Image (cartoon, rainbow, N blue to C red; front, side, top):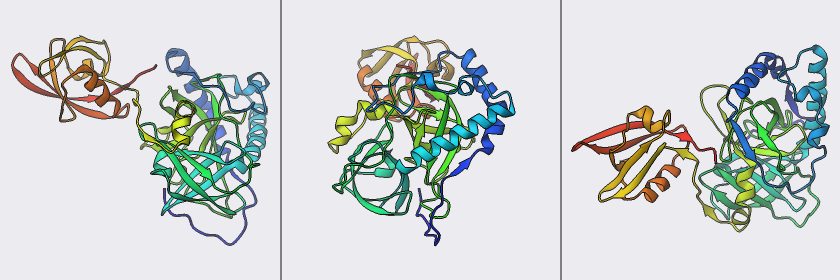
Amino acid sequence: MRNGRKRRERNSGPVICLAAVLSLFIASASSAAEAESNPGKIAKSLPAATETAPETATDLLPVFRQPAPVSVDDLRLIEEKVVELTERVRECTVSLQIGRAQGSGVIVSPDGYILTAGHVSGKPGKFATIILPNGDRIPGRTLGINDTLDAGLVKITTSRTDWPHAPMGDTGQVEVGDWCLVMGHPGGYDETRGVVARLGRIVFGSNRIMQTDCELVGGDSGGPVFDMNGQVIGINSRIQRNLNHNFHTPIKAFHDGWDRLKEGEQFKVHSGALLGISGEDEDGGVRLTRIYPDEPAERAGLKVGDLLITFQSRRVRSLEQLIERVGEELPGGRVTVGVIRDGESLEFRVRLGVRWD
């Protein structure tokens, strides 16, 4: 996030990064192959949609169901669909200014509820400026935030009740290899450029995290991830160094936490991080009774019989407490685990995995 820059000319429409389509001849085949070889990498069903999408899954063009485009005609069909979809959803993709921070969001209800990233909305009760695609600025207020999954909610505070909005994802499954469209205002609102759209595929999905190959930059945080029917299936969250390391909060986090978000609550849930052990409470710590094969604990060198006493340099006195501490960390993060083995104190660095439930 960063401050936006003011431009003189009015925006004439969204910028669509269709050059990415050409690279998807290769990337799509790779994603499809990964999906076949890793059938476990499929997100669970999403909660029921708040509205009916403009198209059903059965209406989706065949080109979006095949592993990769195979002809120039396929590329033309993809381009036509992306242009149509982008024009349809751009009106509900907004820029947000909250204090000095700049981010993006998406309107999902006619009375003006806006999904965004938790690190964009910040603490509940703050004043927000919502910048519409035409440059109009309207007032809003930050509501609740799920700190763990980076889900935030903002509400437009005007009396209008007919805002353009996009439906939240339905109960259909989101699978690795599915096409998606990411929207946002990278670098802040720009009157000349407008909303930016990027086409890509889902690389990874679970109930708590989604990864795509749609490149994100500063200011994209909080922007929507759409499926090819125009439903919101995720919200831009964070990036890492590699171009395909673009992470999003799944729409399920908003469905599951809707009442708490709407009431302005700041809360945490289990992140879905996985250590890969079973254990029993014992005086002074947790005795490890099982180390699951090819999971983080085994790869780090932990063994059955170890007495786990610290996690991230904090004392652990019960299995329940250990589960809670693991859930405070993000999947893929490195943590420090302290154990006693045969009377000797040892410390291990563990890269956490991800739970699929």
